Length: 400
Image (tube, rainbow, N blue to C red; front, side, top):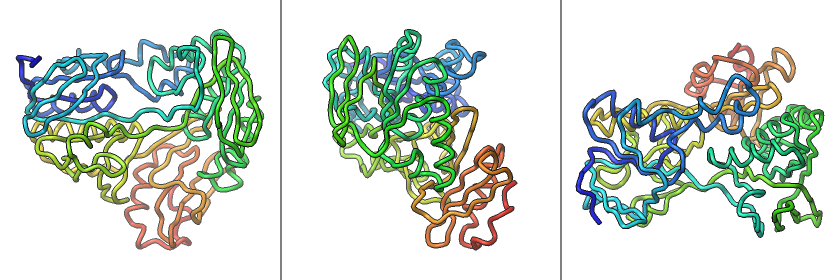
């Protein structure tokens, strides 16, 4: 069934990119019609709060999570709506309930789907959560309010944030990760050991060096089988294993896809009048080269940029995004690539409390970690932009 009203701009996906894109459109065009099709049950919200502030900041409440997209931009938002296909030649989008919508320009902001745990779940998701959405947060919060024990699977940003948040909210937490030391794939060895110690000191049980191979979940709890033969039991389990970019409808429509939907510097895909942005977009960073970034700064900045371009601004996206995490009162930010297998130059003003770590590939800076260092992201970007001119001996003292 065709919808009778064509929209100037149609956005597939209801996350932070959609919110920022709608606002970007409005900066250029006050009267364009905007439709957001989202398979979420909630209107756009601030996703980082789900694993950070909602657990650790008593002054930050559920009421501060929604972004008020519809009220602020006038966009029409249809929730619980799955897009089945896009037809770029016809400028149409088809939803799973058989509706067809016509657009002038289309934005794919489909994000990604969480990597699932290999579990037989008979609890209807009540005690097994692949963490991603606000609904996942509400289910996890209900479990935390009950107290008891939980297994967190994943030693990356989301897994470590959740483990820290849950133990600080009274749960007995076991964190399963693949490394021999928590954070060893990202941080230099001494910092990784200090990072791990924060979790142990807080009471988190760490199980490293193995992956989940199977297990069962039911109304009474979770049993996990690890590849090393160990069995773990708890009242519930939550996975923070990252996402897989949601590219299916782009691939089916013949768009160029390579670790995400490939876009140019204007965030245009290989199809006319179709753009992509956010977690799902592979874009050419002006400093670091082509990449796909799954962090909030990119969602907001790229979202605004693509919204302006949807409305005709025709501006290249030149922002190099940063990302951040916070556990146990320690905040760190980063620009570029953090990979502990690279050479590093450490510049600590206060050991393990305030300092900068530079990551070098063949002598060239490709990433900057700001540990406890605030408001120096532009300085980090400047170092990356000048990387060809900087020797390792030039780095210490450069960012303060």
